[in-house]
Length: 111
Length: 129
Image (cartoon, rainbow over all chains, first blue to last red; front, side, top):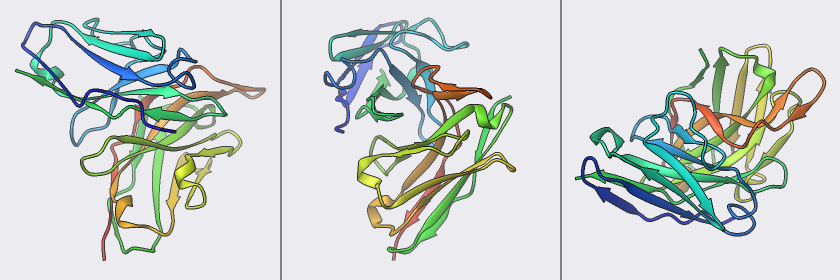
């Protein structure tokens, strides 16, 4: 199973909006509404930000939103803040029992 | 509150084995399955496999088949990940994560969703001669 494709880096100024794409195939992203997104600060545990394409867990800011079209999912961060600077990973269910694939990861920089 | 606490860092020689533990608390251990995820230096997250804490069913990533074994100990609410025949490219931080892909009651197991809602703090495994 090949990793989902994400841009290596995305940057924006405070207050701006950015979007991170996550491209898979018809066997993973395109076939299931089970895309999740994780925020990862170096040295810390990853944190769930979005599940099932567009749902936010309790406690996650509504500045984070998710969507999907065909084989590509997207995470949008609006009103960018300094604390949003981190690595972001998408993940998709791939079927066949319980199995997953992660994206290649995107480093978000707040200018 | 839900917590996943992993064992400490390890240094191993090539060809050796490592066993990392993940102690869970704050919820019914047998209700939620666990996945293991690793991150090599400078690399992204990689899903390694999944284990049902209810019945021990497993599913491993294809590239690790034959080298990885995941087990559970219900008496201590711990999950273990053993990786054998270590190579230098197994050097990574290893995470356990609570997996919603199989939620089990006394009568059945079914997916709540396919994602990881709580993570352990990570265990650095260094493979070096």
